[in-house]
Image (cartoon, rainbow, N blue to C red; front, side, top):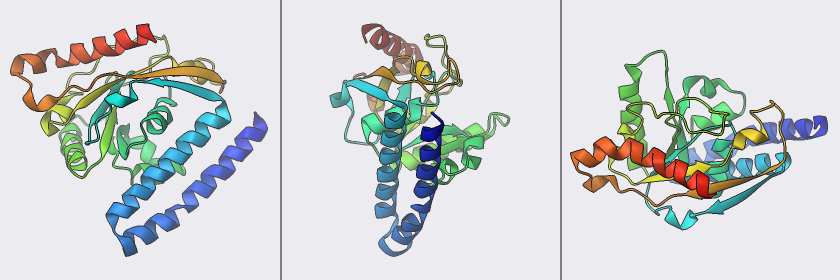
Length: 235
C-alpha cells in the first residue's frame, strides 16, 4: 500500500500540473474548451483513483441519465462517492462541496474550476448564494451532484435528507437523477484503509421538475430518498 501511495502522490502532482494546459485553453481557446478539459481531467483522475484502490464498479441504469444538465442526488457513505459518480456518469460535473475542500492540495484547484459550488455550513445565509450559483452553473451546461444527508453514513443506511437540499434542482427546473451507491464505505471509511471491493451503482429514472405540482414538490424529498433506498435493496 505504501508503494501505491507514492504512485498516487506523483499522479496528483502531475494532475495539478495539467492546470497549465487549462489556463492555456481558457486564455486562447475559450471557457468551453477549458471546461471540457476539466471534465477529461476529472474522469481520468476518477478512473486512476478507483483502479489503484482496486474498485470494480457494477453500474446499472446509465441509460437513465439525460443528455441535458441535471442534478444527481445520491446517498453518501464515503469520500469515494465523488470519483464513483464522476467516472460512472462521465458528465461535465461539479458538486455541492464543503468550502474546506477548496483548500485541499491538488484537488482544491480543480474543484474551483469544475462548476462545483462551495457551501459554508457555519453560515446559513450563504446557502442562498450557493443555490443561485448552482442554478447559474446548471444554465451554463454543468451537472451538479448533491448528497442531501449532509454527512457520510457508514452504517449502510440512508440518513434523513436535509431540508432545502433539493431547492437547487426545483429552482433550476432541471431533471433529478437518483443515485444509489452500495456501501462505498467498505473501500475506505469503515476502517480508514483503502480496500479493493466491488461496488454497485444504480442510476434511477430521472424526475423532471419543470412540471411538478406544489403537492409533488412537498413529496419530492421522500420520494427520491425512497427510490435510492429501493434501488440499494435491489442491487
